Image (cartoon, rainbow, N blue to C red; front, top):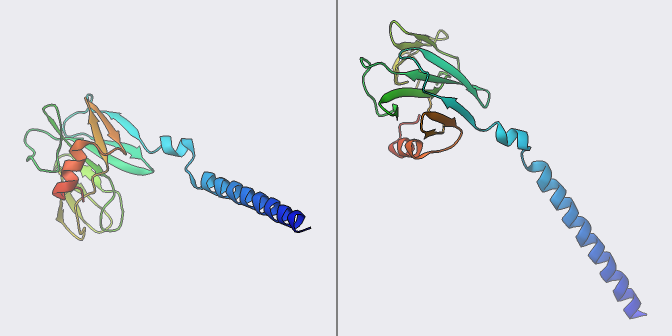
Length: 166
């Protein structure tokens, strides 16, 4: 009789363990992002057609990304992204004060945030008003003339180590 009882206990324990593993697997699958969400994490932008002192705005993860090809009269900065012989500002287009979207004034070569009067230069550094820090540089990778947003390339890692991304 005890061998029958032992068998029933082991069978119940085995089925319980199998059910527990199935439940854990289902929970893990529900926590993983969907393939469509993973694919939305990367955005590729061709920089070859960019014009000097003309702001291009792309969308990445629901945020505006400012891409500005700097002209020769704009001062070089350690925050510049160099592609070939061209220098670019690549930044998340949200003011670091309260998250408003600054407007680019091409004649003055500055970004002006109308919310509280904050201003950023063409390198994304705060030059006036309440913004506490420069515009944030998103993770990026340069592949020829292609900019891949959402992937940390060697250029971004170098900027990150230098402490200039935010």
